[in-house]
Each structure stands twice: as structure tokens, then as C-alpha cells.
Image (cartoon, rainbow, N blue to C red):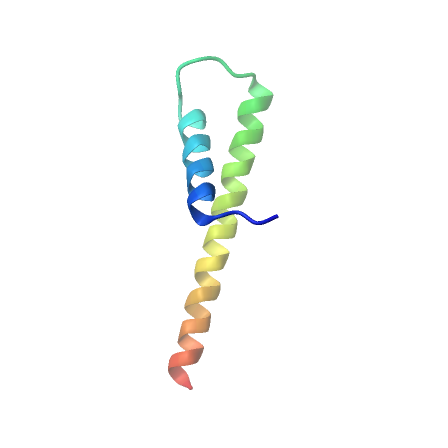
Length: 62
């Protein structure tokens, strides 16, 4: 699957909006799953940032 960074940012923004208390009702299961999506995204985002920092440090040392 290919996703444009703008599309991913839009999806994550929508998930944050829902999880942080958008008006309306969702089931507890739906909120739990959305929180899991958000948590997984944040973990992956941190890993990518760390990988980018490690790669940049290696390039500077060379």
C-alpha cells in the first residue's frame, strides 16, 4: 500500500480529533481501537525519527 504523507497526516489528525473528545458517541471498542492506531503511529514515528537521526550522524562522521 502506498500513502502520501499528506493523506497519512490527515488520517492521524482525524483519529486524534475523535479520540480526544469529538462530539458524538462511539463504542468503547471503537475508541480503544482508535487509541491503538494512534499509539502505534506514534511509536513508528519515533522509530523513524531516531533512524533518521542515526543515519544523519553516520553521514556526518564519514
